[in-house]
Amino acid sequence: MNRDKIRNFCIIAHIDHGKSTLADRMLEITGTVEKRQMKNQLLDRMDLEREKGITIKLAPVRMAYEGYELNLIDTPGHVDFSYEVSRSLEACEGALLVVDASQGIQAQTLANVYLALAANLTIIPVLNKIDLPAADVERVSAEVINLLGCKQEDILMISAKTGQGVVEVLQRVIKEVPSPVGDSDKPTRALIFDSYYDDYRGVILYVRVTDGAIGKTDQIKMMATSAQGIALEVGALKPEMTPGTQLDAGEIGYIVTNLRSTREAKVGDTVTLAKNPSDAPLPGYLDVKPFVYAGFFPDSNENYQLLKEAVDKLSLSDSALQFEPENSPVLGFGVRIGFLGLLHMDIVKERLEREYDLDLVVTNPSTDYEITLLNGEEINIKSAADLPDPAKIKEIREPWIKGEVVVPKDYVGAVIQLIAGKRGLQKNLSYVDAQLAIVAFEAPLANLLTDFYDQLKSVTSGYGSFNYELDDYRAEDLVRVDFYVAGERVDALSVMVHRSEAQSLGRETVQKLKEVIPRQNFQVALQAAIGGRFIAREDLSAYRKDVTTGLYGGDVSRKKKVLAKQKKGKARMKRFGKVDIPAEAFTIMLKRD
Figure 1 (cartoon, rainbow, N blue to C red):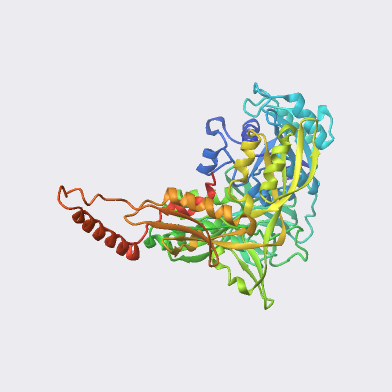
Figure 2 (figure 1 turned 90 degrees about the vertical axis):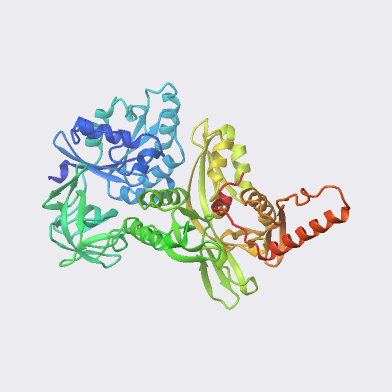
């Protein structure tokens, strides 16, 4: 294909603003997919994506329209997958910025605009859902004009659902998005913007070729991991895999390789040819670091092997997933998995339960901590149970994030209050227009893990949206709070927390444990402690069986004798009795209120 006739572009938007629906209409209009094969969210392959109505994995597709080759990448909208979005933007020259005409600009819209500007893309603003009764075209247009500095006539008005205005979008892409630059004569370089594992074919790479070309049966090499393989098949996605002879400079397509794991071909890596390798990789490669960790345990220890194999298989197609074996005295053997965020964790849990038919117990999510010991040694822990002896610790550093909340101006006070309650620091307050404010802040990640997003939605009546990125690690006065059930420490419940919040968190958690742990035939003490000092306690009262029911009349000493015997039995039970802790006790932190 002549490079002047190629247009590479992606769709960026906040979650649920209509990216996938717009992609559906484009596929229909360009005749890429026949009408009888059309279905909603066509590019979203997973059942989970359809059910939740969100894009989890990006999907490229090639369309032919008016003699042009249009390569579209439908990106995820959620903050957890922003690294994938940034790689996709690197593979394009243009971006359609889709804004919901009823909801306006939201946090992820802003974050993606900054990413697109950083990647030097041509941005085409699109106002979607203009057919809705709640659409406020004037207000949202003013927000977009303020954000991008464009004119009113630059904004395209469409309804992706009905198809109104979508033809104009395609024409604008052809007219305004520049054709790709690249040199066919230079050594081959191609950017991997996604990779996944297929059970039957091995690792499949989605690439954008910048220089040179990659043909079928070429020996290929990854520049960051130095892994080598063979391009067994190359071609384009239309949206099904359509094999070709080679991918030329400027084109987007797929490569089927003989690699056995996506760890050998990570997102952001550069592919080159083994026989004529390039000297310099494409810029911007980062190793994706998980920063949320949770323990996954099978419902019964017999299923540990199944869980391990399932996580192994899943990690083949998700290079961001990192895991290691874990052992807990209460829950037995399991794996500790690192995630990019809570949505990522949710999706992995659902996939393990559905695709591999597992019943899982998931412990409270936590983040990682950097620790400096008195002897100068540096260690990194991923769970509170791994904390070394406090007497040997010089300082503990926890991860902080930079966040942005986009919210109507009436709710600014409530948002600032919420941030302060999470030990956050408000940094900046700016206004997109007369109605919409952006609150920039810094906060410790651990405090935002569980229910910050839900609380934000409730204090802003659902209008607030939130975006964040990892900033740095800061030394704080952190302590480990342990929980004891009937005098036994339950490691899986331990949490790291700031000393100022330890008391209230301990009290709150033991009250919640009291609600979920069933009553026993003997009294059970539920306690929270820092080191050897107990800071909170609740008692689960024992079941009372009326042992005097068969006695009638006679001397009171007969009753006393039977009650004394019962008391002895209960004391013995308390010594040897085991308390069964139900699975929901381990996710108690997720349900803060």
